[in-house]
Image (cartoon, rainbow, N blue to C red):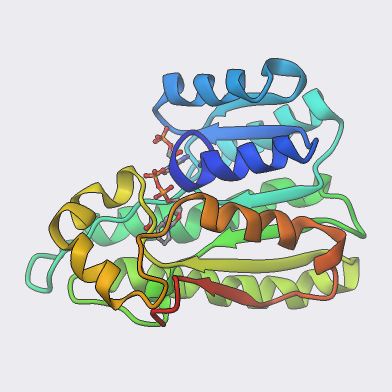
Length: 233
Ligand code: NAP
């Protein structure tokens, strides 16, 4: 999910710290290529096309990371989708596409990366949502998918702790990206008014939390979810 929005900013932050980055994107090759070039091109960042809901695709991502950079220290599961629908308008395809992208995808990514993840010392950071803790009308399936991400992070932390790998989640409130253009246009003033810090969140408000969780300073934190929503929750 590094080609746009929060994931792109996370990729930038890692690159700024001197890390090498593999960006995964599903469809927007131009956006992914632009970020990879911005971060310094092949020596620093490669962009790999993959649908995270496909086992072969995610295995190919892990293989590309190992081939290009020799191993994997950190996995950030940021790719996700956020459609909302009211009760009365749900169908199986709607529910499945959200659960596939937001729950199955991160699980498959962890499975694919694990054999190559540095241990001890590896890090997995999953992007959940503050809606996991305070869902709003029409967000039910999305919110539930992110509650699953919170619980997966907690459970994976217990499984991977003995290997010295930490697993944590970050749960953002509304962040200004392509995903939230419509919501911010519709209710931006209201969201800002209910936010104690008095503004709409930006991708940079999340990226530093992720690099902190990836750093040695966060080595004693695992299984936790950090809510970052300007104080709404
Ligand atoms: P975004 O701007 O819509 O970007 C989504 C990213 O995920 C893109 O890079 C997209 O790639 C990738 N992606 C989506 N489905 C994929 C799939 N099946 N396989 C591979 N890549 C896939 O989203 P965002 O706002 O940055 O959100 C990032 C994460 O934060 C999501 O998990 C979202 O649920 C979560 N979040 C966002 C907010 C918010 O307010 N924005 C709040 C809380 C949590 P392509 O463009 O190539 O499709």
